[in-house]
Structures are given as structure tokens and as C-alpha cells.
Image (cartoon, rainbow, N blue to C red):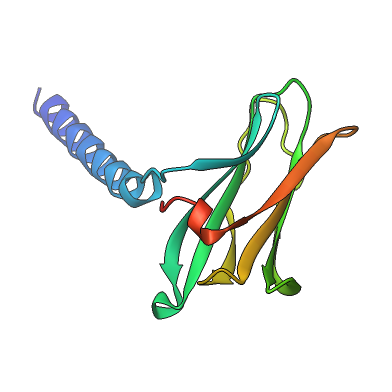
Length: 139
């Protein structure tokens, strides 16, 4: 009977530790962003939101593809400064039906000279556009 009581107490203690570890890792990683949609292709969406970067001198634009289509899709984004391409770019890779891509990002300066150009495409169709940081909601 004593062994059973110790075993039960030990099992309960381990369960509490496991729950605590799970909750501590879920908190920050599971924090939801307020995703806005930059582009749609049927039920696939290129989504974005922004956070301040470089001490407030720039924006970090977070990007992901959420695919509700019946086929695979992919997306790209590139930052332009007054029409000139910068090195800040992102590509999602192919995202299968029902999946969401990992979150990536590009960094762009503040002001009207800065834009992000993007595409969302499948094997035989697609589209894209260009937006300034003012058109992208904060995360």
C-alpha cells in the first residue's frame, strides 16, 4: 500500500511538472498575430502583419501562407526603396492544401518610398501586388 501511495504521488508530481513545462512553452509561441490578408487565390491567403524594428526606424513585416485551396500554392515578397529592389526578400516554398507555411519576414523602412511587392501562385495561375507599410496592420 505504501509503494502504491509513493508511486501515485510521484506520478502526480511528474504530471504537474509536465503540465507546467507545456504551459510555459505554449504561452509566447502560441501568441496570436492579427493577420491581415495581402492577396487571395481562391481559398489560399497570403497574410501579413507588422512590428516595429531597428529601434523604430523600420518595420518587420511578418508573412505566411494559409492554404485552403484544393491544390498547392506558394508566395514571394520583396522590399523596394523608391522603386529599387533591396536584399530583403522572402519565399514560402510550396504549401500543401490545408497547411499553413512557417512565418517569415522582410524588413522595410518607414515612409512612402518603401513598398513590399508580393505574389501568390499555384502551378498554372496566380497574382500579386504591391503595398506600403501603411496598408499592413500591426501584429
